[in-house]
Each structure stands twice: as structure tokens, then as C-alpha cells.
Length: 305
Image 1 (cartoon, rainbow, N blue to C red):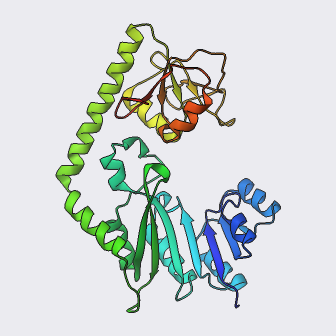
Image 2: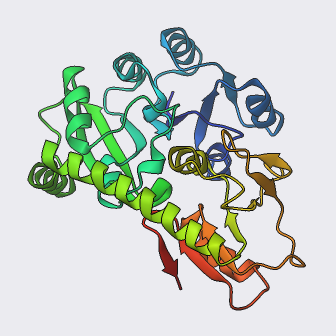
């Protein structure tokens, strides 16, 4: 096999396979969701419907050879056994190949008070230091890292099988040094305490608006919405409803607190809107036709402009 092979783990409907195929790059995906994997296969993107494990790894090697690049975006934090994943990925990867993973960055979550990003389906959260340790235990080393914007700030980590020939980038060395300087038990406890204070501040401000008979709406119903509303005990008495652009969420309710989720209606009056999908502030602001709407970030509670 002369042509390079890319394996995308958690390939969804072929969102990465499509541009790779367009570039004439030999690629396959692994996707555990049958309906989504079927969409990819129907579109012509070669996809194995399976969880990535030893059995799947053996099938890939047997049928396609060892990939020169394995990509796993927003997969690693969902794993209950990262060790098994690393062993299987190492076994699947060609000797000089690279594993690229993207994970939510714990330091960002702490520094930016994004505690609502702690979800039930993510057993672990990572710093570069912790990733370096667990990969090292299985004979792999991180050779480069980039800080990227998704999920409030994530790490894109480049990992190879250990070799004396590898040069570890300055990015890795700088980030490890920075984590050692900042992260401590005292730092983490302080941030958790601050989060509780900010939740109380959010509640206080919502109650003040309610006392003034101001109807507050929300915008965006990502998973982290439920983390905030359940932890803070916020229901439709404080936030009348949530606007969301996904048809899958429209005309449903938020988990736990049952706040109605509706599509955007330009005819309905908006005056005060809490953005739970705050990273899309500018596109949401552009979409809303009404002028003089006040937008707020939930944690910390502050007016956006």
C-alpha cells in the first residue's frame, strides 16, 4: 500500500471524510451510531459501524493496512477506559504515524469559569500534563499541541509512538511549564468556590428582573444549559423559554427544569436574553431583528455588547 491512509474515529456523517476524499486522500471512518454511519456510507464515505476497539482495529489492519494518521475529535473525553483506547490506537497506527486527538481543556474550563461544561457523558477532563502521563505509560509521546477554539477552548494534541528521533515542539514545553505554574489544589478549590458565587449572582439578577416584571428569554439549548439550570434551580418562572435553531430541540423542554424550547419568532418581543450558547453571540445578535435587546452571559453574569 503506497497511498497514505487516514482513519477518523467518531466520524459521524463523514464531516471530515468528505474534505479528505475531495483531496483524493485515502480515508475510512469508524462510527458507532448506526443511523449516522449509514448516512456516511450512503454518501460514499467508507465507514465501519462499530466502536473503536481491538476487534475493530484488527479488521482495519486486515482490510486496509495500518493508518498513517488517526484522528479522534471530541472522542477521548467520553472514554471510560482511555488506556484501552491508547493501546488499540498504538497497535493500529503505522510506526511513523501520528494520532491527533481533540479534547476540552481543563485549564480553560477552570480559568474561564466554564463549569457548565462538566457533562454526565464525559468521565474525564484533561490537562496536557495528564495526557502526557497516560500516553507515556503506553509508550507514546506528545510531540506537538495547539490550543483551538471549539468547546470554549480545546487542545489538539499530536501523539506518536516513542522514538529517540522525535523532537518535542516548544508549544508542548511551554504549555507544560504554564500548567505547572498555575494548577494546584488551592487554585482548583478557589475556582469551584467562585463558580458557586457566580451561580448565586445569576439567580439574584434573574430574580431582580422578575421583580421588575421583565420577561427573560434564553438563547441556545446545548447540554451545558441543563447543567446551569439544574444546579441553580432555574425554571420557566425565571426564564420564560429558550430559543434554539435546531429542529431536533424545538418544541421540547430543557432536561430537569422543563423550560420550553422554541424556534426564533421575529414577531415575539425580546428585551432581555441570556445566551447559553454565548460563543455564537455575534451571529445570534445579527439574526435577531429587534433593536435594543440586552444580551447577557450566564456565568459570570454580565451584559454583552
